[in-house]
Length: 579
Image 1 (spheres, rainbow, N blue to C red):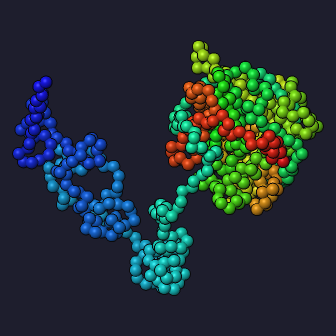
Image 2 (cartoon, one colour):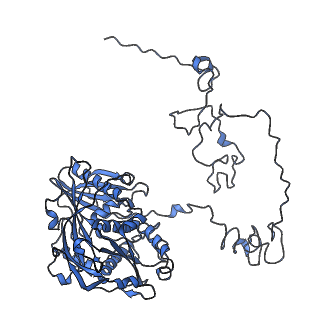
Image 3 (cartoon, one colour):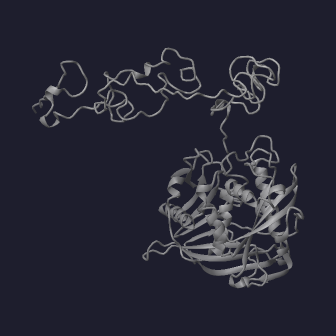
């Protein structure tokens, strides 16, 4: 075999040693086109340029300036007075396409002959009579810098001074001051990830927020339970005639999907509850961690929850700029304590605001208990949704929805006048994590709009879930209670300050909640689960991912994961819900 020769291509070397194409070797079609040099910030794959002048080393601040624009200043500016940032195209060298005026305009200057009025109260370094040089001046006066005595005090620590005090300029334009001392909050996940779990999928929220799926109105398959009539007297409660929140002696059950006896049929291929599905449909709004169990059994998929899992947790101020956090020392206003308090308030408030002597029996009794008299008002409606994208496939979802009451004079057996009851809770307007919420006792009656807007901002995820649950259940109205602590230092006694009435569809529109986007998220997650073989999976939201890159991960887990340690665990959870 003969070796092939390699011919070196001709290399053009500019005689003057310059960089770029030489005019002597240019093709004829490029003769009259000027060559535009690029700046170093342009991402063009160039790795060297020895002709660009070091413009950053010139300027008044290049020679060791220490002022605000110098290297040691606070303005964050590099030498030459230029801030760090992307350069314009071709700004690093002389531009062949720049326009140069023929005449020399260096001698031109603008003369301002307008006389300026003298400042009131002075403003120089001189001494004047009275209390300092002048109120609000730079170096003296009330809060002045060089005056001893007077109201300004020494070193400018007075009111309105330059270097400190009330209304001073010190600290302005100092964003990020002592950021190096601030430790980033590390939130615990809703479940501890075992090293043996395999991560199968990772979905970012940006992708989820762009999904869309239009779903038609569902079909009600069955209804179970007993529903009590709502007491309209609570619509007239104000901050002036507040009512205490009592602890009823009734229990309400909220079993998981796999423990529901009716949901195990062959009506559909996907099974879930409204609590789990609402969390999935409002996932892009969530901040804290949560998890959903997905069990793939043949052609069926069950979306389930853990006992005491995050799907039943009611967070407080999750979407606030500085949400409540957990620390080693458990406090009244920690995230965990507030979540338990919110669950306690919601359960008891829904039981208290109904009439015990007026109720309606649904076609089927409560499937989770036999002692009906000790059960709280609850109606379970099983609805069948069609998630098919085209006529060739058939994707049915059987969903268990819940309602809390009905309006007097309506027929709840036919789905008329159904009501869902929720409650917002106030803990302490001055505590960390309050999210700038106003005091409800002083603002709820006079400025209800400001209170509602603050709650929508701080609890976007929670209130979005409530709106979605109400729409899925077919409720005509949603009662929203405002419950506050009787004493800010006691989380066991509460009072009802007011109750608002709203329609779920209008409430969802105010929160900017899109059901089409929610159904698109559900269908995407379902397709991901059906893509993998039979088994048990868990969908986990990472609470510590950057705020602009939140993700959801799908893990494959063993069949015995999240197994109950003892048989009485469910009873313990139910007693806690109904206490």
